[in-house]
Image 1 (cartoon, rainbow, N blue to C red):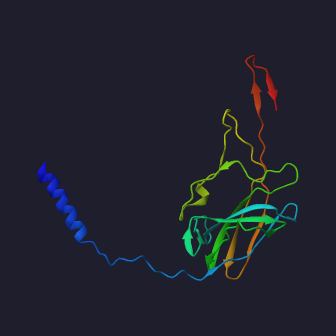
Image 2 (image 1 turned 90 degrees about the vertical axis):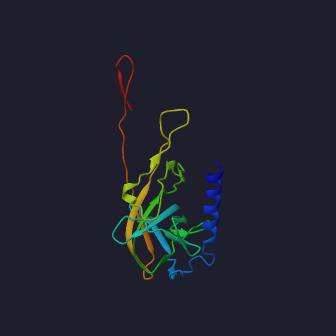
Image 3 (image 1 turned 60 degrees about the vertical axis):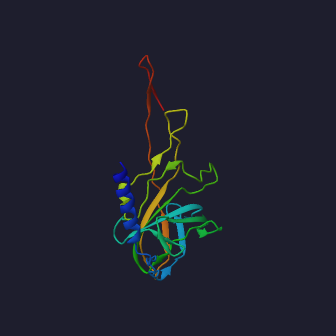
Length: 195
């Protein structure tokens, strides 16, 4: 047992003695980043959008997530904009900053309306990583805690658009997607009720 302990201790000493103390973090320069302006409308009403817009930069012509530069570092954090009447407002925005080039930007938003107001969708977002294929990731509904039903999501509005960063602004004209659900409830007596 003493030989095993002594051997492990010797291996540890040799390993630490051979370590290169001159290692430094990479000092690669950050490419010239451009932070374009964002303009957005809801296309079926032609009115400027009010709400939160999320912008996911992808590689040109694909849905492969490129990432976003935050504090001059490439990160998984997508663009996040507080929008009022089609213009960016507030201080809590995480703008898209990218090197000059062509990208496919995927946008998601739940617009804010007067009645009812649903400014934050009750959805579970997919795990996001740089290089992941957004077409294979899914948003999920959140289930009520004491129930087997799910919290409704109102007006989730998507779009995607190619953009040439450095030459164009972000133009996120949203299109509504509407889905319906027919529910048939059966009681124990096999009576049918349609909702």
